[in-house]
Amino acid sequence: ENNPDLIVLFISLEMPVKIIYERMFRYKANTSWDDLHINNTGDIQQAAEFMRSIQPRLHIYGKESCMNLTADIVIDSINCIKKQLGLTRVFVCIDYLQVWPSPEEMNSDLETDKWTIAQMQKISWAFPTDAVLVITEARKPSKGSAWGAEVSDIAGSGRIVYAVDGILQLVHFTDQNMLDLADLHSFSVNKSNERRYLRLFKEEFKYRESVLIYFSGTKCRDGMDKFEVIYEYHYKKNRFVPAVWKALGETIQHIVSKLPVIESKEKKEKSAKD
Image 1 (cartoon, rainbow, N blue to C red):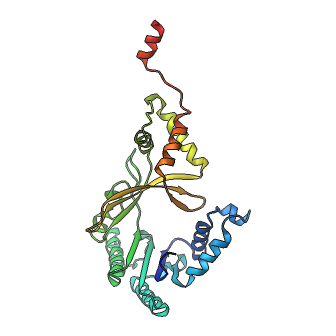
Image 2 (cartoon, one colour):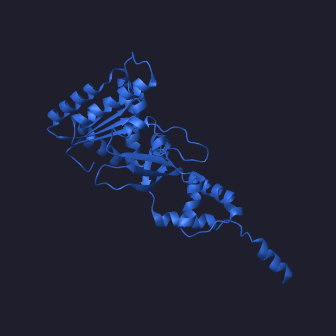
Image 3 (cartoon, rainbow, N blue to C red):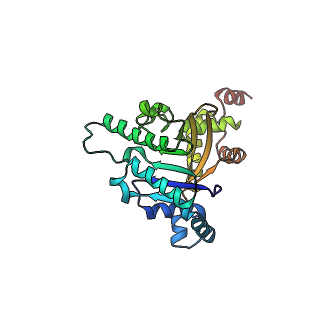
């Protein structure tokens, strides 16, 4: 939207093109599926104008293209689009690595992983000054850990780490993350209140139809700093919004205010003596 000279190629091989366009429309309209299709509410005019404005530069390969797609086809398509539109820059997003079609003669997961990552590198090397974002799975974490919290959680991490310039991990909030947030905002949650606090925390964000996640830049090319940033994901509107630190603190203050005051054993004994 803010780069009128940029072509965007989005490859999502598990979703039909129609659904991808609808999700983009709902994001710009800032509305849920129900509100858009049943109540006809949201910033519909704004979303329609946006979709029309980017249409020539937005190209999507969906589920319909899954069986026939190769790196060579992607490269040829990008070069053709650049020539037609007279543009030189492209952003490629591939969603996701594990569903990229591979030759039938592959005999093992290891062979398939190597071949698939080589396909991603081929696309990236064809456009060395452009960005290629490849989404991949995270393995199921051990009990108590967050999804995608470590680089080693990434499927195929041993090969991926050396093939990319940067890794951006989407990490789900754990119970400990929720407790840490209270601590960072200087709200002390008594051990006896932890379960109640966590329940109220989850209920609050369920009411808002959202969840907290954080993006972690765990590997960056030279000159880039590692980082973590908290986002609130509104799942019905398919919308990521950067979490405002002050607003998070006010939310936690509201939750903590509902907790019962738990007196320590020493304080109770002292009160009894008095």
